[in-house]
Image (cartoon, rainbow, N blue to C red; front, side):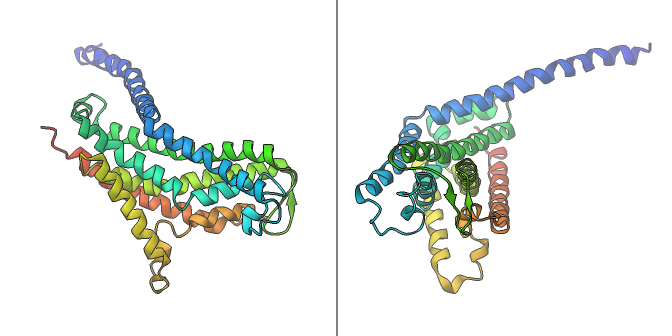
Length: 291
């Protein structure tokens, strides 16, 4: 064995030995970020508000009875409690869910900067790219947790207050209760993925400031502007490129067979927004002066 081979062996052994440690450090970073996000009082209060949405809708429909005159998914709740899940998710999407996402994403980096902990995180062995990835993963988990909070609350309230059974789809066909639950679960997942573009915008805005309130306001303001642009008919040429234009495509899962075309285009659009703004946040955070 040559001297070079002898010298190479400790280096290779060290490199192999470092990999599990790096993996454990990455996992610890992700778990720490999840604890940080879900340990905040505002996160818990926000999830509590989302859980209350199906309860308020269900109680209102129960009091009004089947002759309430409501249309759409809300009008079907009295006949089948499963539709309380879909109606609650649909009503939460235009305001409650985006508000929750803007609060959490706007605080992701700006909150650390305001407390003075971001400097320590940027100089930690985890690395800036890994830190940003942990922040984004935590935001994605929150998006799913927010929609699933509504889903679970709607399931419980709907099954308690209303009869449940086979589900009448928008196309006129009927599916079993089990398939209806799976479709409602798919709607929650699609809505969660639809929020990722907004979460990416919030992460980028949060990298620009050390004031969490300013980041939250700027992210929510961007969401409002996109909503206004979407509502102006004269701007129809740019509508397909706007973040929230295809958010309502989740309803296509209640057709037989499901219409995947609009859902796919919506998710592709969200992915585009996420990639662009995550890359912008990465460029900002990796060039940030920590002195």
